[in-house]
Length: 156
Image (cartoon, rainbow, N blue to C red; front, side, top):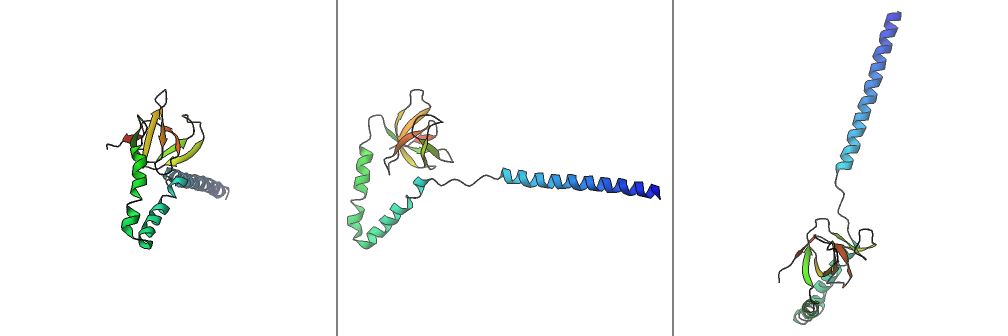
């Protein structure tokens, strides 16, 4: 009888250890798969107003004659494009996650906005160390600094 009690203890001990190891492996697998998922792309506040101007232009032609509304709208947007400062040029964002717009040319500077992937911007100047670029957003005329090397010059 004492031999069967010892056998039961050994079998129960190994069964308990195998259950603990199995539960640990399952929990580890669950957490590692959750951590390996890429998070959703953040939506910057600057991206939200963009649909509303296009929605307004879509409703404006319906409310009034379309030839009159279409001609004045492109003219104001074309005049700022022609008035680029000397040395300034247009570019698009090439970094897939978009760029952070900062108030100073430093990674520790305050983030004042964001620029989406493939969005057009105006490069105003480079920092002294050539690691940062001062940019202006054409739609809002907001200015800030982005990390250099993440934009592509647009040929006109």
